[in-house]
Amino acid sequence: MVQFLGAIRSAPSSSLFGFAHSRLRFSLPKYSISVSRDGYPQFKRTFNASLQSNAQTAVQAPAEQSEIIFLGTGTSEGIPRVSCLTNPEKTCPVCSKATQPGSKNKRLNTSILIRHPRFPGSCNILIDVGKFFYHSALRWFPTYGIRTIDAVIITHSHADAIGGLDDLRDWTNNVQPHVPIYVAQRDFEVMKKTHYYIVDTSVVTPGAAVSDLEFNVIDEEPFLVRDLKFTPLPVWHGIGYRSLGFRFGNICYISDVSEIPEETYVLLKDCEVLILDALRPDRSSSTHFGLPRAMEEVRKIQPKRTLFTGMMHLMDHEKVNEELIKLRDTEGIDVQLSYDGLRVPITL
Image 1 (cartoon, rainbow, N blue to C red):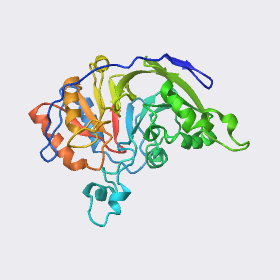
Image 2 (cartoon, rainbow, N blue to C red):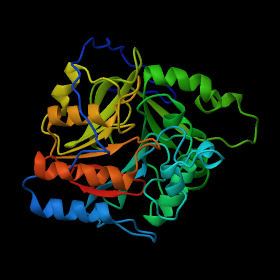
Image 3 (cartoon, rainbow, N blue to C red):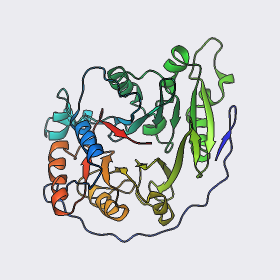
Image 4 (tube, one colour):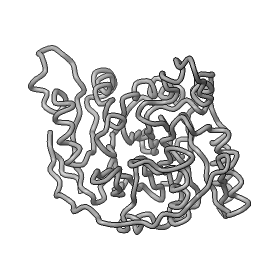
């Protein structure tokens, strides 16, 4: 349920799910894993073709085709790391590759844009607007002919999810009158401190321009954004810290997760495309799935196709994907790493 504020909407508090999980071992020899999918041949051909695309010029999607555009697929600090590039004693192979033009190892803060056809034109909905949002938008908005932002949905209140709220002033000053923001009450409380001048514009110096945002506080019930239904997928992002994934159509997006509550698995049934957190190739951290744990979840959820996101500099795109592809033959599992700028056609 969304409660429209004008400025504020309160949401009923939700009890936190208690749960435990059993850990399985998943070994990655030198990054081992793979990819596959049964049925839907036409969709599969289109999808696979999009994975190979890394267009450098403006590209328009067919007017009737919904799609996801990955604006960022990396960690909060981004890839390459400055510290890796300035280390005189050790060369980081992934960060070095990330400096090369067109490298799929270059990753900014995790975020997607959902482009959904409407009449007239299309609707552009962002999930998260992190501290590198300006750089992501500068790279991909002109490339893919994106101009407006019809809404922003927030997963949680860390800097890599809300740090770019201030940059939305370019849109509300020059493109559109305001941008609706959909955010949980707990995260809105954080915004009142981190972005107090945007939440309460009465404190702004007269004549100064800030982002004009319309805050819509959501709870953990389904809500509509421009007639498109979003179902929150509550997860843990470290002990005691709540984050939200979102389901729209048969697409499930979970970008920041260390545990999935049992109650959330029900919401993941019959998932067509799963976009899931996978920080590093060898193990999980206290706040993120690593690749072995992410693969356990894929086997449990059984989506038709999975794209991992949120990768750190230990994840070499080509090497990891090379191993992931092997799972297509060995297990019939279709899994790949996403990358910044990837476009995925979807049906909503």
